[in-house]
Structure formats: C-alpha cells, structure tokens
Image 1 (cartoon, rainbow, N blue to C red):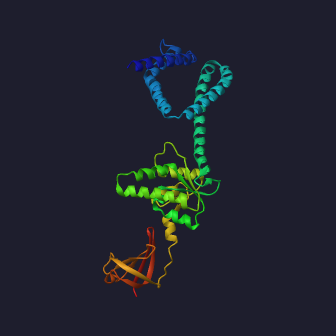
Image 2 (cartoon, rainbow, N blue to C red):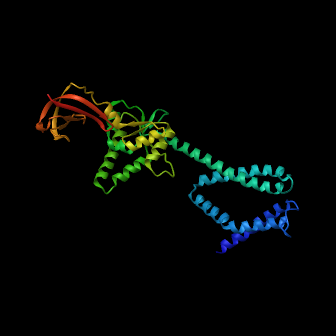
Image 3 (cartoon, rainbow, N blue to C red):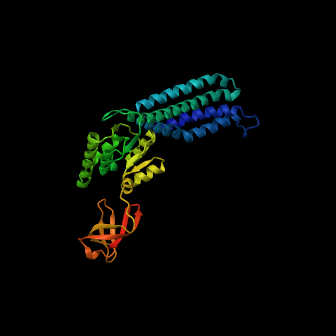
Length: 347
C-alpha cells in the first residue's frame, strides 16, 4: 500500500515537472480562465503521474526481476556490455542535442540516453542468442566414440530410430556412411524410458540402450554423442529439428509425426519405414508365391498370410486353407502409407 502511494507521488512530481516545462512553451493565449499554460501542464502531468505511477514502476520492475532471475551470467554480461555501449553513444549525442532550443535541448538528451541504452541491451541479447545457437552446433564437430570427427556428412538419430534397431543392421551393410549423431537429450529420454515403471516402456528403453551400445562397438560408421542442447525448448522432437537445422543434416527416424514436423520446417528426413518398404522385393501380378494362411480375412472366405519380409497377402477363397502352405497367384499389389498389400487367389 505504501509502495503504491509512494510511486504515485514520485511520478506525480516527475510528470508534473515535465508538464510544467512543456506548458511554459505554450503560447500566452493558451489559458483557461486564470490558469496559465505552465500551471495547466503541471496539473495534467501530475494527474497522469498519479494514475499511471504504479503501472510504470511495479510492472517493469517485476518483469525485469523475472528476466534477471532466468538469465544466465553470460547473458547478464552481454546485456551490461550492450547498455554501456548504448549509453556511450548517447553521451556522444548529448552535447549536440543540448544545443537545440528550449524544451528540445533539455528533454532529447535524456530520451536518447534511454532509447540507446535499451537498444544496446536488445542488440547484445540478440548477438548472445545467435552465438549460443552457433555454440550448440560446435560440439558436433568434436570427438566421436572412434576418434576425431571431421566436417563430413552427418545424420541425427532420434529415439524411435534407436529403439527400432534396424539402423544398426543398416549401418552394418555399408549403405550408410554418414556419422551418426546421437544428442545427449535423446540419451536422457532413453534412460527415462528404461527406468519407467511400465514393463513395456522399460523393455523398449533398454532395447534402445543396447542398440546404441551395439552401434558404438560393432558399427562400421562413427557414432558421435553430441552435448548440444537448446534451453527453453522442452520437447525432444523440437530440439531434434533445431539441431538438424543448425548442423544442416537430415534426421533418421521412424516417427510419423516427427517426419511431418521436420518436413514442414525444411529439414530432410530419412524414414526407416520408407526405406524398409523401398527395399522389399517387387511382386508383379501373375507371379506365383508360396504362403501359409495363418488367419481369416475381413471379407467372407478370405485368408491372410505374410511373406518373410512382413508383407501381407490377402488370398480370396483362402479361408478353407487355414494353417496350410499353398501356392497362390498374385492378382494386384496395393501400396499404402502403412506398407504394401498383395491380393491373390489359390492356384
């Protein structure tokens, strides 16, 4: 209560004095009854100061305190340096501005000091943030689990690609020669999944850690653990996209949602599922295949079987051959977003 009253009194005096100076420059004809221009300006300024005092004092103070509590020491040093540069520039302009006539020479030096000080803090903060983003990319040029990493081609692995496990088999074939970058925050996510109370999630997390260990020990390509991180971005997917953009490299994933988000932001994606569909053997209508019917289809009389690569075959009239190995004739092949589906009938 006392602070509110004190702020109103302080700003009443300040704004009243400013209004007095401004009113003294008004023509003599600008009077209301016996109230002259300076007195009218002081009254209006004082009223504005009383009405706006708490908002002009406490709200900026709370905002400034919250920003200072969240800022790192490096950010504070950059802000202080920017403030000093802005005030130095304002000091250089103070002498020529003070030579302006009347009110301009009195007010403009203070206004420019405030504006240039704020501008210096803002510019220094922007430069600090840009250098921080560059710094997050520099660890990716450090050392890998197999020695020094050169400025070669890299791909970023996400959590789903590691848990999936097929990336380890792909790296063994020699088709993948880029350095595999595994961010530290992906390792943290794997560790949290491995410590989950849910048995299924716990097994998935442990499988991901085992695959990563296999990649480091048996893979023919280098694996790099990156310490890059992005403060203020809690989502792992968002961090992956930002890291890939800073490194200008693609993301290896099996996550459909991450695939779409990355593509929308201009980041290349290597989808493990799309690769698996692309390398499946080509089957043309009219070919004969051997398949075991293991379950009934959705339509009456249909039977369903699977090839060795997991491709589903729907056999018309195959229900009567349930649990039997039969030869079928392919009639058509349907490619969907979920994979490939083959339709056939018993030969």
